[in-house]
Length: 266
Length: 139
Image 1 (cartoon, helix red, strand yellow):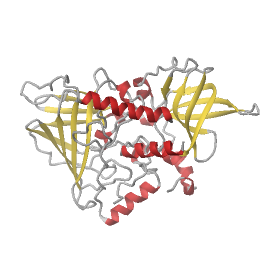
Image 2 (cartoon, each protein chain N blue to C red):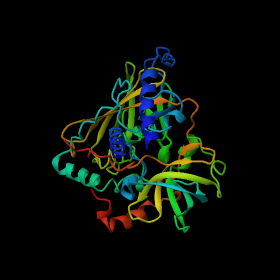
Image 3 (cartoon, each protein chain N blue to C red):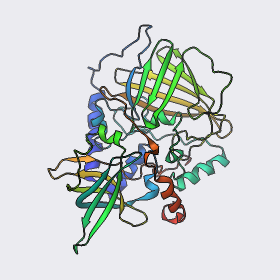
Image 4 (tube, rainbow over the protein chains, first blue to last red):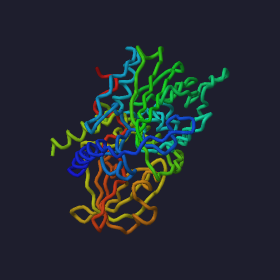
């Protein structure tokens, strides 16, 4: 325990040092002059360096990270703006400690959740005509054509349909065509098929991309909900395999647990 | 110790929606930390989670086999583990973690200490995936 805590504080101290380091290399740009997002990234982190350092204790990642965070704890996320009836449903998932998580059934995490999962890397491949997102976790991918329109024959999908364009140095991705089977991010954060996202990827330096997703869903939210995190470059990391169905015993175990909710309900 | 525990819980909550594949918090009790010393009998290097099986002897010399859950292979590789090299049946190790809520010899592992004193994480922090201590809709 003490070791873990010490790790946190040491990491915070290291972060304060490294982010203040003026020697951070410049941001790479592609032939068109746009920031080049190509690389392997760890979402939910503010720490430059290797994956090993990021996972050496507190660097579990996967949370919201405020813009311009400078070594302090991440800001408390704003409460999710759910309509009253929907709030009760989210609260029930929270009370059941997320036992109804769609990912426990090996379903894809969807967006923006997959872009905030700190334990697993994602790879971005940028070309002039499209940007490709590859997520190690659940083997998800997104092909994002630039300056294109959404197809008119969309079917409800876990990852939705994405189109992108550049606004200055920010890649803006519009995502629609979702099913209602994923969570937005936090425990219980369900949405409807009407969900629409505007994602913004801003590479602020060689090591870091700031990520912001504006979540609109008039069927369950009272107003747009903004999810923020940052992604740190992980040079040398390669995506590995993750096959959720290999030995997923969760559902059977959850069935047993749910027979006696008093064991874990809060 | 009590203060440290609370501090840790707060830090994890502050880290936000770090939901992993499934709720460790539903199955394992963050208020029941365990430290087990024993001999490895089997390692399942598997998705979505790996397992260590450990023979642990109690004060009366009675041996019980514990099952300890942890990260999938992709995460273990990335954080310094090598399949069939880092941990093998017969190895004596110390594992910290948290016990299953049903009170059986199940646990969710965190840190493994090897004979040479080296330490590696085999599983996530307590409560991972259970939403932390503040509901997303709390005002």
